Every structure is written in structure tokens, then in C-alpha cells.
Image (cartoon, rainbow, N blue to C red; front, side):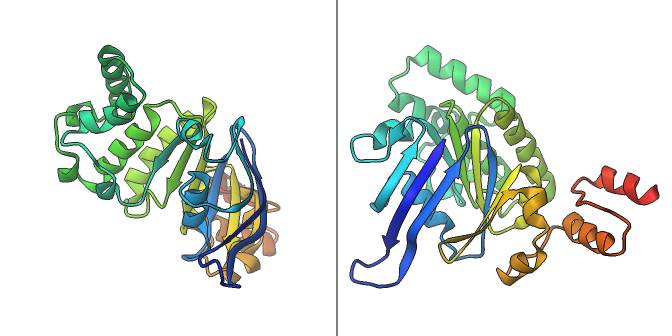
Amino acid sequence: MIEIKDLIYQYEKDSTNYIFNRFSLILKKGSFTTLVGPIGSGKSTLIKILLGLIKVNGYIKIGDFVLCSKNVKQIRTQIGVVFEDPDQVFVAETVMDEIAFALENQNKSKKEIWNKVDDIATCLGIKHLLECDPHTLSEGEKRLVSLASALVIEPQILILDEALSMLDEISKRKIFRILKDCNQKGVTILNATHDLNESLYGNEILLLQNGKIILQGTKEEVLKQESKIKKAGLELPFLADLSIRLMYYGVLDHIILDMNEMVDAIWK
């Protein structure tokens, strides 16, 4: 779904300090990848590049289109994005109009817009908020409105840029249940975060540091690499850390990332 070859980008043209230097990456269709890395690793810059907000050298293909000025508008219709601070991207005075905004830009009929807004609001449990000012909502509600705005266009790719960083665990679990359902329906998800705990909700992990891929693979494969993860300044999720310690003492022979499975394994 996303293919990058030999990406080159530097903040200043005359600088020798490259953010990405011959960077390559492939994300398969239907994958749920956690793009993780410390602040300054290049996560947000990479997302801006994928959205065509930053011009770079290199080959980028998203879906069936090569990223270029000619195709960027078409590519953006395939991508839903949820940013870290919803207040900076809200453009409407009501939640209903906020969710409808992207559909209006696609010249949908009023009836189709209302039906789609009603459907997504019902799905996310925010129908009671449709007449509210989005700026007055709680942080969790704002994220749900942002997610609704991204999903209402039925994107092939959903990108989250530190979108869940300010939420409590209960709100995160609610949103990740929704994301998992979307992923099972074929939506490719890329969740950029500095919190490795969020990787437990996805299938694959991509560890980025200083514009380079340090680790990439299934979450079970990557979370075994304790030394590389800690060297990048990240903390292992509790269950991964516990698994590694129990494997050291011979209690487990593999990483377990589900609490119920962990309890069963220990009690055996």
C-alpha cells in the first residue's frame, strides 16, 4: 500500500544533515503498523512527506499512484489522518459540520453526506455530540470526532500522528477497538507514536531513529530486541518486559502480549 525507495530529505538544501538519506520502506495493504521512535526521530516528517506536504527526492507510491504534484490530490482522497492536536485542525462550529467537511469537498449530495455522517457518528458513539462545538469537548471526544472525520471518507489508509498521546487508557482502548475493526475491514493503518505500549494494539512495529529503520517486523519479533529498544530511549511494554524476564528463568519460551494468556501461562 505504501512503497518508498531512496528517499532523501534535509531541512536546508545546503545542509549536510539529512533527515532521510536513501530511506526505503514497504507497508503491505491491510497492515496495522506502529511507527514508533523517540521525539525527533522523523515520524511526523515522514507523515508530512506521505501527505505531499513536503517536497523530497525519491520514489513514493501510495496505493496505485506515484506521489507527485499531479497525483497528490487523488492520493489524499485515499488517506484519512488524525493529528495530535485536534483543536488546530477543527474548521467548523459543530461536530456535524466538522465530520461533513471532507465530504463536502468531494461534492457529495446533502442526503449522502447526512447518511454518512449519521452512520459514522453512530458507529463511534458520538451521535449525541453532533450539535456541539468541537472545541468544547473533552480530549477523548475530540479524538473521536477527528477519527470520525478521517473515517467518513472511507479511506484506504488511516494515519495517526501522536493522535492518542493525551488520552487515558480507557479512552485509548475504546479507540483501538474501533481501529482494529477498521483494519479487519481492510483499512491499512499507520500509527505514529513515541509510546511503545500502543504497539500492542497493532500487528507490526517499525522503530525509527534519526531517520533510519532500526527494527521492523511483527510486534512479537521486535519486542524481543530489548537492548536496541532501550538504546533508542524507549521503554518496553509491561507484558513484553515481563515475558523477557520469565523467558530468562525458563518460565516462558515465547513473548506473551495478552494479560489473560500470561496469567494462564504462569499458573500452568
